[in-house]
View 1 (cartoon, helix red, strand yellow):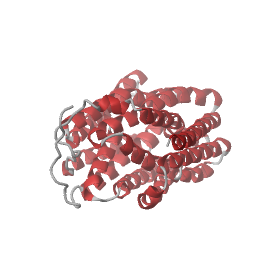
View 2 (tube, rainbow, N blue to C red):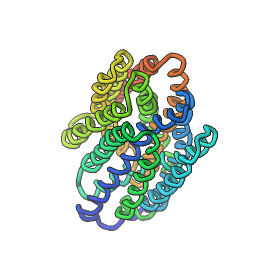
View 3 (cartoon, one colour):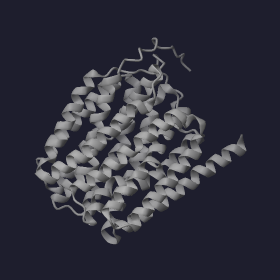
View 4 (cartoon, one colour):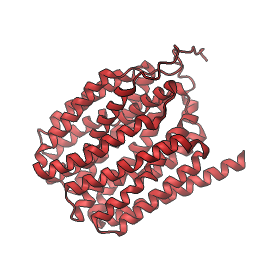
Length: 393
């Protein structure tokens, strides 16, 4: 195995502070557009729920390749900022084309290109944050919370604007947000791992570790449930009689609720084992989606979205913490990409394609009941894995 040399000294705690927070804010604004506004836009074009589900399954399908490709390239070049610029430029070009057509077959092709550049952004941004906090001593939450604020702001603001101005303004929201995010890339600094000479000879052993495989499999089962909500919440609310503003409020409730959990886990999370925390998060998902399957008032749906704090809030923070134990720092972007492939790739593909069919034939209540069952299975898996691990120790 080749020798590994240590990199230059750690940077100043102030480096990459405000620019990275601003970038996280606007990037998650665009994420809000994708999950809360795009379904409304596609519905306005006359697409069925099955067609919309197919469009949302493109992202996970393409993401299986694009996450690994861009993550590996980022680790190889040690230039996350350049990769961010390239993928955002590609996403902007695809968005400019998207709003010029309404034929489903053409939109399908354009969305394929859009997702090729969009799906790796979450993992690359998290890698940038994790490498930054490893050097300046700050918490992951102090950066990631700005993404939650951006998501919440966009969900409500764009929802209210769409209610007043109509769906014709969706292109302006999307392209404007992408342009600002792209410009903010120039304020970021490349955060390299603690190794200047990369050695990928151990990557296969890391990715085939039984602990990592078990973790990713359980994440996949839980993601089947979570991705249902990402893709179909807006359509479910509209079926219940909600307007665009209510859809925005629902997404705002979920985004805002996760922020205190991030800070709590940053301060006290180290006191608890990761696997039980992940099991608790999966249980919160199961309760959340079961409640959504039995209520019929959109206002109560907004209330259940507050459980996002105990489900996604705990899951994301804890999963990333556990991932750092399973994947060495020098493979950070690649490990994050593999995680995203399972969380958003394979799971998103299945939940998008089959979820649309279930929604069309049996309705949203049945879809959310199936999601609750998947989350319950993941909950059981995480707790059993923890128990078996203790016996092995």
